[in-house]
Length: 338
Figure 1 (tube, rainbow, N blue to C red):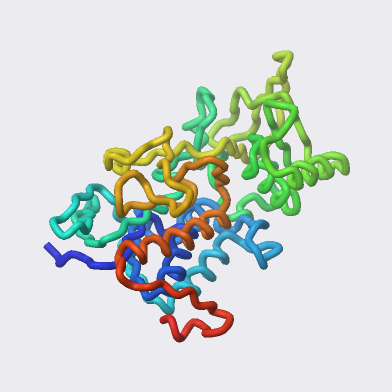
Figure 2 (figure 1 turned 30 degrees about the horizontal axis):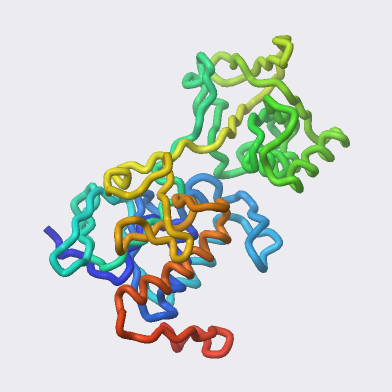
């Protein structure tokens, strides 16, 4: 058995919030180690939509998800974080000195006084529509995740969904596909108003086909997808020729083993104190999409804010007798901290 890994803050989840935590912790001389079940850092941004543009990061009118991860890794690099990738956080126990020992599913042991759960939506899988022959066309015309938009260049595409992901990909893919149809079972959308307006404008100028109060009810084709059958509110059916069907109904979150850690849960979220994002277990915090509190917004920039306040609280827990003096990087630069 390899020797246990020791750190100040053990971060579960190497997505954007987890990576940014490294930077904030580094500013107060705290070391971090990150654990993630995925084989690379970046979380959903790397695994699911690296080429998707993000519009709500301060200072970036538009940035690709993969590019944001690269920049966050560069920002964290001076503080030399450790990584345990491709392993899932499995069990924790409190040691006699008050620290935690966390063991992964592969037996790697980590010891830290503070644990920050930044696992995004936890273990996730796409929500799939209830279509009879869906599995037949998976990877043969049905995709739940868009990693490389170029795959759909000059193709006929049908997207189903009414949230931000469906709207954003409709806007982006409309520039490169031969034909694009967005199908939504309601009149109104759940996504950002700006994205809704853009899709409506694209429909008005004939750039996309917008089919509301309808849903895809059947897939047809031989070895590859060739048609989708759509039914409207009045149960009238019609078909559309297509090369790809992309149902974007969100992700089904699963906390996995974390659900057994005696944390206060609200469905698949962890309840926290919004003062510092601490959980009911002293020394364990939850930041980013995985937590829940009054007024919670699941935005990357909110995760950055939560990470910042959490680190301040973690420092006081680790060093209760030290005064924490806030220093501005605009004055000192990063070299003084790293």
